[in-house]
Image 1 (tube, rainbow, N blue to C red):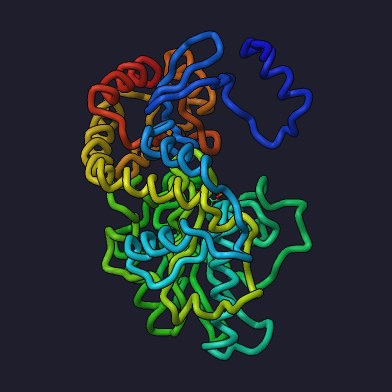
Image 2 (spheres, helix red, strand yellow):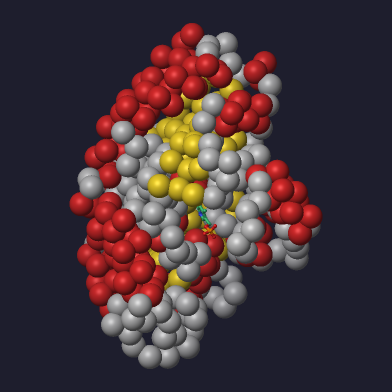
Length: 403
Ligand SMILES: *Cc1c(COP(=O)(O)O)cnc(C)c1O
């Protein structure tokens, strides 16, 4: 294959690829653990982890072995037949989540769609809501994916505008506002869909008790609580799932991203039979959902999280990283605040500091790949296999740029 330079590749993409992203000007052609490399051989620490889809680190040997071994025997059957991987993955994920049943999909948005369909169907069949009246409560500044139904309740104009007519049946209330939720509930409410921490909004951490409060409200009004753990799940915030910081037992857990171990889109919804049991043959599905290759990869991805104690490491190293960033904040005239949990961290810039992009570009030049979210927030979410020495190295660069 002909070798292209970074400049050439970016020019080709600009000409032939739709411009639905605004990537940092770096081309990645190799990766290993927390490190990525461009075609010219320059190395960078990945501080984004593909939006938390690479929690296990790039090309984790156990995940790649599972991928290769499975590719040698069986890749796709569709669910028209049983295969010998999906049952074992379903059992493993059910045991991990403490839920009775799993429904497998591919992308995060598909899993969110599955949760929406679950809540609606449960509403009609179990709660006996009148036909086409079901309502789901969602939150301002949410991010749940890009399908037409999901963007119907996005409050971000970029993600939302010009995609109408929009799917009705969603009530948007302010995040971290329990009274607003209680007020929005009526006899047609079937569910609440929430991110335990709002990742895309800029790592917005709600007050302690918010999730637990939602759980109580949901129970009181016979409404399902669905947590979108696509970005916060699988050890990112220092626990297996971010909701586990609170005394709450959500009815539906939505998973994606790191479930695929950074190699493959794998998503799923977990719930008890009283909820997921609403689906009968033919009522929902996906050609690739539960495919043997995805299941093999996901089982290995889960094992890595457990075997390498990534939740504990994310908690410890996240505390360390955040403490260092807060020390820097004290001496910096650019940083307004530092927030996050585990290794999902954001720096919010002061207005006077200008746009985040100039800083992510400067960090890139120094070998650190971070992505801004909005114009004034920089997110740090490295693979969870990062070490304290790596964080010290990264902090040197961050101090140079933001000190
Ligand atoms: C990334 C993300 C999604 C969408 O996942 P895709 O795989 O991109 O469809 C949904 N919810 C949250 C919280 C996410 O971070």
